[in-house]
Amino acid sequence: MKSKLSPIIQVSELKELHKKNDLIILDVSNGKEAQSNYKQKHLDGAIFVELNTQLVEINEDVSKGGRHPLPTTENFSKLLSTLGITPKTHIILYDDKIGANAAARMWWMLKSVGHEKVQVLDGGFQEAEKQNFPINSNPVNSTPTEEYKIENWKLPLATLIEVEKASKNISNLIIDVRESARYNGEIEPIDLISGHIPNAINIPFSTNLDENGLFLSPEILREKYKNIFKNNAPNEIIVHCGSGVTACHTLLAMDYAGFEIPKLYVGSWSEW
View 1 (cartoon, one colour):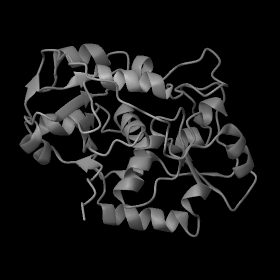
View 2 (cartoon, one colour):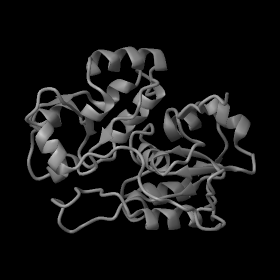
View 3 (cartoon, rainbow, N blue to C red):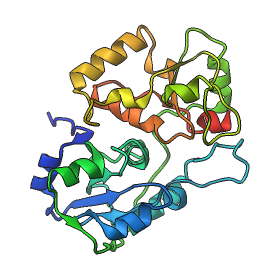
View 4 (cartoon, rainbow, N blue to C red):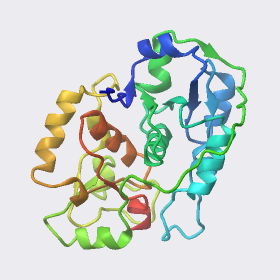
């Protein structure tokens, strides 16, 4: 029986793999300086992917899908083909925020279209640089390939209506992965209103990591989330954040721990 590929890869493992022909490394760092940072230095062989123009389809009205709605599967298919990705490609994702930003989001998207060989680099760019992974400043251009056929998003998604029902039902579990100060309404640096969805509990995504910014072991994560889930089935659990990006970091942690991936509320607090 074929063993399941871990969703997390260590820098030491990537050092062994990174010259293979069927491997594509993607720098999915996000932020105003992300592209210029990539041009200054990135992991050797990495291609840059931008969250706001390639992984989402932003609406002017944030109340319809939030700040980072998913693209259509047709557009995601085109992106994968442009990046030279086929269903057999081994993809390594990293960002400059310990995998907690767009690397986790793209991991969820790839898993959701059925891509099997995809992993997120533990500790992201900073950990790779610390461990002397080869760094380069020359931009890498992709070699487009044939159409990557996608039928639909296969991982479970929660709609605004479902979240509204769950917010009034104590048998459902809504997990808000934002930092506690945002959940508590003490600060709100991005969205119009502060606070949290009724009935949501706060488990910041940062609690998936140790003091060095690396993922806790699958065993520790499994024990942690087992205590949180209690008797809730995966279809009764909804995970969200501010805009459906860092929520994927917690879904990644749950998958790493061996759980079935619960529902992602893409619209998150920004849509709510």
